[in-house]
Length: 303
Image (tube, rainbow, N blue to C red):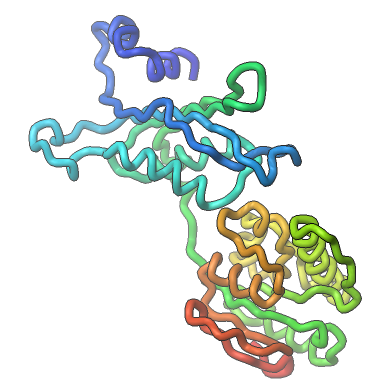
């Protein structure tokens, strides 16, 4: 990105001198936008915020905005700040590189954007400013790779009694034969009894107990594949995999995720997160909610 990035981020006078006699695209920019964010791969960066400074420059296609003086005819600055806010709100991330990629991808979905430069700096983590810079454009290959197919899975919550039910095998046979996408959610292990005085560690302990139970189900029938990331969930939903959700990563990394570790409540939450078609509940009371269609079924009759 070299000289292009230097030109994009340089002061206006310097850019003008560098590009004399060269036809340059129009650019809009948001610079030195500072936000307090929880981000980072180190444990010390969890449960605390640090300042990030964003500078984004977007090369745009010619428009009639300067002539019409109509905000609808231009790429608005709000598009840039909203892209930053949306990606920060979507998920807690470990890497600035991932955040920069997602901001660039979101901006490039706007028809007027041609190329975007993103610089993100951590202001509180070192003797100087630590950061990344990327440049991305609207190449056909990138747009094709970014195309996504929306899948609305059916969520199924299994109480622990299902694990020893003779109907479990037939239930999994029907899931595999069904063309719909399914994600299984399970409860905590029956022998779960570890308690901590502090709520933070207890939350981790409870989530790990659910994950242990997910692996227990996988050991009973290997057709049940334990998945813990959004990428794994998306792949499983699109490839007829019977996925069992291990909640720790998504719950801990998602802004606004529930503090409660009630397994059925988490099943409702991930259903809303994945835009599920419905939640089928086996072996437990149906939750009283309106945001997601829920109904009780038996293992022998589901789905």
